[in-house]
Image (tube, rainbow, N blue to C red):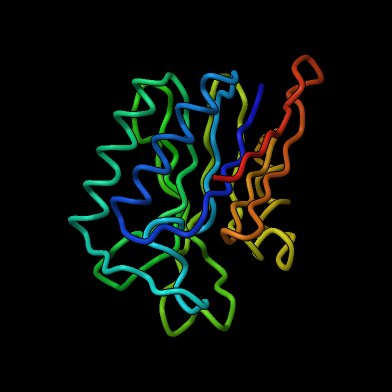
Length: 192
């Protein structure tokens, strides 16, 4: 399985971010990727860093999900989309998993926030498994996977073969392990 690691430049607007997502999904699919992983909170951008984050509400979240689901279906590629999730309790950092048919498989929230994120986001409280083309995986977002090893250990205990760790736009990282040794999981990366 080829996993495409997208590391796009910070989007200047939601529309700019969506254009970059579509281009990177198309490009990764043409190179044989089966999953494309985007950085933590790529849409609208990770708050608290040295760039302006455009306004983002539930309408923007829904519009982005519809567009990305259509592009996944059109390009026959799955994605792990880093995007804010708007809830009644506040904004969450989340990874939305959309399969190659354009179906939202689910959402993994960032449950252990870095202290610098506390003023912008609320933590989630669940962990879940996903499966794309026979590869089971869990998601730990940014420092959850490095600072809190139980996030990766949990997924291994329930049968995952891969962990995805979407990080900030400057350092998007995904760690992958082959499925029963039969297929190699090869990460690829391209910056745009």
